[in-house]
Length: 240
Image 1: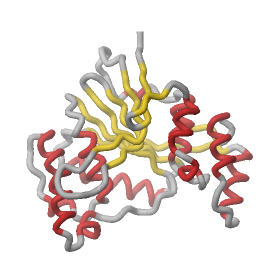
Image 2: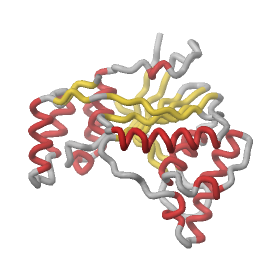
Image 3: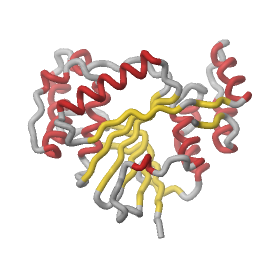
């Protein structure tokens, strides 16, 4: 028998609607948020963990939304991964993307801050401890800082098998190339000891989703009531 437990951070969740409510309305002001298709995908269970865990013994899973990993060194906020799927011997860290612009690079994020250098050092130690190899910080200057601490967060689970998956929803070629090149570069730098993948989906938007996007484009800046209702009742989109 398969056992699945769902959490939002540290809180155990019993129904899908509870997940939506835990985010708070600010998360859903815009109809373009990538959290929306992530939740639609989860609600409709159109994945089978993407077939990424091949061990048939891994039948029990814990799904943790907004998984937080505190910094190891220096002072700073936690890394907050969209969704972690945790097994006894494996984990999949999932980050969803749709219309987000390019992220700040490690070099730009660091600036001249000694504290941020410590924070980055801590993230790289988490990764280095997992892959049993030290990472030269100079080699990741042009990578998105977010990617580095997302991978570190996955490594912090200490599982035998670790996978990081970026889910792209309706990505154009420019965005697809952006994510692909960064994920590929980091994967090679880590000697492919951590699986890092980009999986892309197309959105089949309903009339309601299109209406909300038009409202947002015309200047409306809080459509959370309609979006939350649409997520709960599955009236916004289908995912191919």
